Length: 427
Image (cartoon, rainbow, N blue to C red; front, side, top):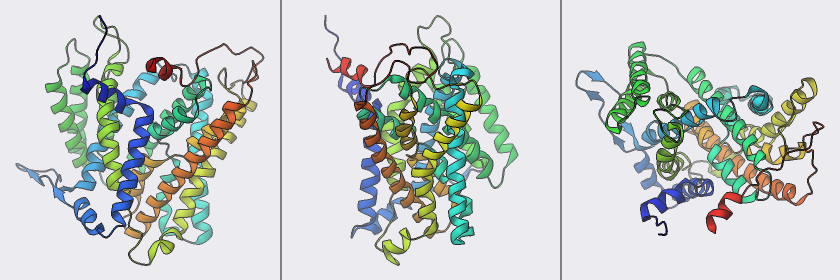
């Protein structure tokens, strides 16, 4: 009897695809930009600033009277960071990060891909004398996994799947470091009792998610309370999502056939890619260019050049430089199937900052001038990096590959190629 799928299942599968995630992000950001610069831009601003939620719950001051834009950044984005936490847990326990020898090169490349963009950002602002914007140094250090892997899936067909694994490993480490940066450098005041309460809820969540039969009606309230307390503590609320995701077991338990990290990611990813990320992009990307001094004054800010150069040039230089150093100075080598030339598209794809860069932009600046300039720079830099990455991927795919791409003296094993899985699905 042929297997049939329902409409909701087909929608979930479609939304979960890497290509769909990138397309929804672009579409939401483009819609926001068009609306924010249309004759109806005041309606967009009014919608973004609409306040929803209580300031108090009983005797507790929970500060949940937030604008819709803040709900998207603090609330919906926590769903995305939960998925990031689940992915991190899987990669550390059962994935590409479990073997430090194999993960060493992309991990070092990720660090280089964060340090150099930050250095370029600081150097540009110091050169132009705009020291008031130095707080945004972390904006060009982020990589958007969904967007970058989506571009790779579309334009990297025919390339070894090892390139995708390298990019994923690099982006996961990048996300982990970005989380640390947000928690350490963008937390101004901590309310310790609220933070302690959030950690207690995370601990209870961890205990129940490891039980034989975890129930959603127990996990969901614990997650909501943990998020609320984390938000009240002064630490960015998305950190709660990461911590909760990191508690999910990455090894099959109690006779299960698959790990819970896999099942939780499968369940939550459609909401993250299909709802949380597009709505965040919609509220974060709506920068008005037609008011005030116009687009010229906004784009002419030093912060725009600093972020764009950091994303497009800094990421590439940092990844290539760190990889060259680690492979020449240590016994570590690139993974099998990957050559130096493959790092060119990887470096460009890592420059797609988008989601996390937009979040750090909002955390960095309170004045609209720098904030809007930073957002425009993130959008422009990410688009340029994506286009250059797409061109580099097609160039790389058309060139012949040797049997020992990583030059370690051993023939590379024959593996899969990007696009094989989708080709099998289509047939």
